[in-house]
Length: 334
View 1: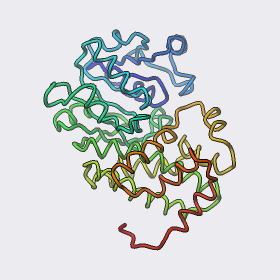
View 2: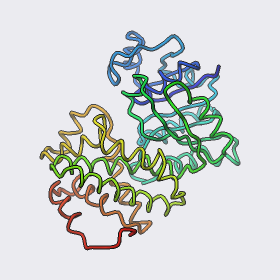
View 3: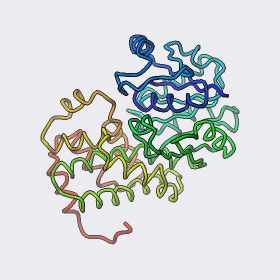
View 4: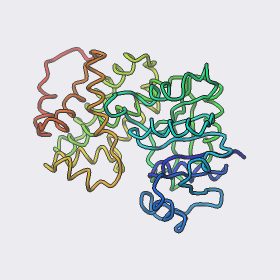
């Protein structure tokens, strides 16, 4: 039996911790001592995941050093905005345990993907010997924790490590595939959130199933262009971390990013939407950063552009969709 340290006790971090604790010892860490105290008393995470009970193999910690002690794998599920700091905290403890992250987004202000942050903070695994990788795919916490079948991808540059780490998390109702395309898996997880906001806007405007299917398909084309420009394999975007996660987030009733789009279409302000959401909707911060990065890469991303116009530049949801529909005719492969 191994020990896994899960950092971040939001809905997905908690669901992963509860799943893994069926097979291994788990330390679930959260920065907020009050949140940790509440989870210890309830033996559950009512704040983010309802009344699903923790088993005896899951311990809750607010002390990072204790959480990481004797861990065989660190699974970081903190929001992307806090990912660099958690890596700095791990490094400050002189801890060389392998790190896998499940956060999906681009870092605010730098427009860097988590693998680029990991490269800067932890170094190249080929040099340091400290492996790292990304876990992503179509996965709602509420379904995993109910024991419903879920499949995700774990990517690392070292194929043997990817298989070993996947094996630690794999089991029961969670199937974990391994990959060596860290870039592609990271890009898929980030950009699908932007497309989910677009799909939510389309649905909220009452544009129907045809429009949503078109939005998803053209969104996949944008995601692939962006990823390939960064060095990803195009095949990755046909898999769980690409098309799989994109379809789920654009259609599923648990999708926070789709909900943001639905609410925008109804005329609510972004500030009001985020205040009432209660969870992080990564797509909101990610959209600005994707646009910043796309311009630098000279990648055409019309859907992302229109979502950014709505989120950050005061454009109405309806005008954004009409702008997409009014684009000039072109061949599909472009």
